[in-house]
Image (cartoon, rainbow, N blue to C red; front, side):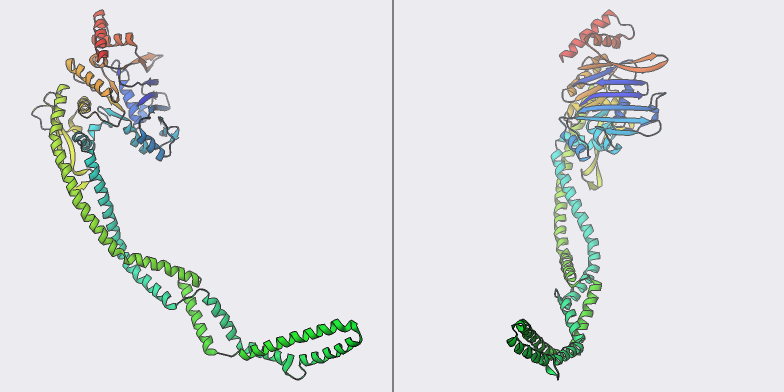
Length: 554
């Protein structure tokens, strides 16, 4: 509910703070005192168009702040949380207008957008009167009202769920058609690539092994020649190193028998001989194995060329080429499975279309049945609210294509004068008529998720017993929701739980508006003024006191 409203520099309002209570609050005062400006200020909080014309003369900025208790509104808290705003049990909305055009919106101290404000505010307040946010001016709300009256909200939600699922399936099928056209081209490409890689029979580490073999074969002549020559010099030829080393070793061994100090040298020479002998044998065996093989070398070169081409086309290494093949094979499997996916989706689409037709037919039948009852109930209420002979006709128009709400569009047609054909409410209903029509709807459809309702012009063109009836009906609505009402009728004002008087003052050649919350004695004088005019008589005071006493008992 709305707990506080602060207005600064809006039109003739200098600074104004209003603390609102639960139940029915009425705002009274002389014509022109500024009551409509308060409604305009609330309109700004609801996201209505901001104009610099609203800024008080001589000021550069106008500000409106509204504080709401949202303890019982978890959906609002969730919406704000998703939008990035910290919010617990209180919500502060601030809107500032600047002559420079820099208009700003704040939610709980953080900058916000007009789009978010326009989404949140109508969930907090509805204004009923000749106002942009008037529920009855928007035909899309008429369907919601009819469904609520018919008690088919769950049935409608079932249809909406089916519609959304069907739309999703159709989107998937549409996307699949495009994907299939692209898939045919991609299927050819990927199949070729997969087959080319498969035919190559790649093995991890193969390239390194081939490079080693190639290096050996390419240098076979050199390897065989050098290793053979080394063997000859060590062992096989005349004057071979090992023969000389054997003679030297034998001589030093003989000397070590004479001089023990040469024993170590003799041992080292013997060891060197044995090591060189092993090396010579190794070189002999190695040179005997080395053979020139041009055919094998050519095959290796051809294979390395093939690997090089594949690396250039697909990936820098053999291992990465194999990973790429696994990837495209998985994609090929998915592409080849598209046909089965299409069949599954088509079956689901057909089933949903059948279910949607059945659900939509049930919804249409329920709406047609409820529209006649709603017409009767609304007209009965309207006739009580000074609209004798009024016609309210909920009409159903079949749509070319279904929407998420059903197969039809609903709009309330209205005629306030007998003999005149009903026409759309937004085109012919006055502000007062719209307010009273909404008041009538609230008697028939009391449930609402909007905590605060503002009725403007609800008493236009009525008086007497009808005025009292309007007051009683407002009081009835206020038992369930917070109701704010601007009124000139004492018969309405006496039913208030809170009465605020709006006054216009002129000080130092400036006009300003102030607001007073009235106590019991002050309420009596205000109601007496509303009864008698500028001259308040004792009889008017007595009558006012009696009216208030009767109103309080309701």
